[in-house]
Length: 599
Image (cartoon, rainbow, N blue to C red; front, side):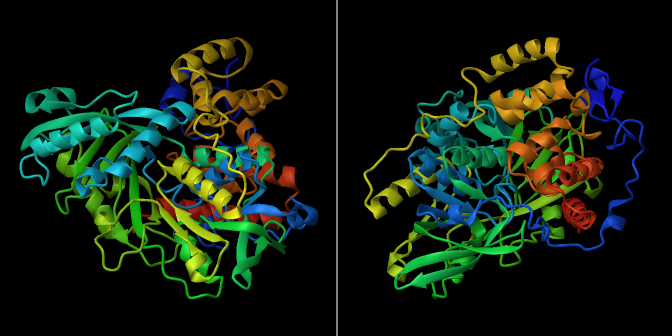
C-alpha cells in the first residue's frame, strides 16, 4: 500500500490536487480538535520570535566549547551568514555563528525566491553587479541543482510603458552578453501576435510584444540557508540558532568578547574570536549599537511585500515580470508550487524589524498592477491566501528613491571607527556565495594567515546531485516505487527539498510506515521529515520545523493542521513541558495570523 494520509490510503489523484478536505493531523482514526486559530492565542509574541522555553536540560554545548580560541565569530543566521560560516570552516578556520531566532528568519525567508541576474540593474549601469549576479546564478544552477531551477520569464511590453520595445530589446542583448557563459537559453523577442499565442493569459489591450528570457528560481530559500549551516557544522563550526547577542565588550580598539543568551536554556554566555563579522542583515545597525560607539549608519532598510494566490485556469504559464503603471517599478507574478507569488513592493522602512506587515496600500498596489495585465481573472482580497513581508538590508543613502539604491553588497571594515576586528557585511541572495568568499578572503588577510582559497566554487551544497536533476529524479522514483510505501509525487517533493540526501528521510518509513503519512491536507511533507528536522537539522520549535525545515508552513493551510503532530514530536524528543509546548503553539498561531491577515 502506498503512502497514507493520516492513516487513510491516498489515491495519486489526491496527491496531485492537494485538495483533500476534512482530514485530521492527528493519529489514525482521530478527529482534529483544532479550533479556529484566533481562539488558540493565549499569549501572542512577536512574529517568529523564539518562545522563552526556560528549559536548561537542552544543553547544546559545553563551556569548554565556547572557551576555545575561535578565529571568526559570525553574528546572524541568514543565507549570507551561513554561507560565510561554511566557507570559513571549509578553509580550516575555527568558527562560531550566533543567530537570535533561526536560520533564514529574516530576508532569507521573505523574498521572491529567485536567483536572478538583475535585469533592471542594467538601466542603472551597474554592469559589474549584473555580471556578478549572472555568474553566481550559473554556479548555483550547478552546485545547488536540487534547490535552484531554471525559470522562464515573459516580459510583456505595452504601449505607453516607460521602457518600450526597442529599449527592452537592447537591454536583453546586453543581458545575454553579460551572461555569455550561461547554460540557459538566450532571450527572444515576440511580436504582438506571437505573444498572444505564447502567453494567452495577458491582457491584449495596448500590448505591443514581449521578451522571453530565463533566470532561476529557488523554491525553498530556507533550505539553502540550512544546508550551508549544516555543512559549516560538519567542518567543526559551532552553529547556534536561538542564541541572541545581547552585549559586545571592547578592550581598547578590539572586541574582547560577545555576550549572548541561549533562548533554549535561558542562560547567558560569553564567547570570543580574533575577528567578527556582523552579518545580521537588517539588524546590522542594531548590533553595531551594542558596541557603545557612535558608528555611522550602514543600513537603509526597505520593505518588500508579497501576496500569494492559488493558480487559476487561464493564468500565466510562466513567470511574468511587469513594469508597474503607477511607478514604473518591475514586479513579478511567479508560478510557485500550486500558487502564484506576486510581488514585490519597495518602501522605506523604519519600523519594528521583528514585526513587518503588509499594508493596505501595498495590497491594493499589487492587486491593481496584476489585474492590469491579467486577461482571465481579476484578483481581489478574497483571493489572497496569505501575505508576507521582509526588510531588505540596502546601503543607507539619505532621502534616496528606494528603487535607485544600489543592490551592491555592503562591506564595512570598522577599523576607522575604532574597532579593528569587526566587519559588517550584507548582500543579495543571488550573490551570497561570492560575498562569503570575499569576506573570508578579507579575514585571512586581516589575521595574517597563510591564504587558503575558497572551495565553494567547486564543492556543491550537501544535497546537490551529480548530473541532471531531472534524470536523477526519474531514476530514484523508479527505485523507490519498489522499496518504499510512497507515491512518486512525494519522492519527487522530498528530492526537491533534500536532494540526494532524501533517503535519510524515507529510510525512516521502513522502520515505521506511519512516518510515511502526509502531515497535512495541503502539500506533500510527511511525518518522517519532522523527526529528521529535530535529529539532524537543529530544529527546536514548531516554527523552525514548519516554516524553515519543511515546506508546509508556506502552503495554503500554512501547516495549521500539522501543529499538534509537530508539537507532540517536539515534546517527546526534547522533553518539553505542556506549558512550553503551549508557548510554542501560541507563537506559531501568531505566525499564521500574521501571514494570513490582510489589513
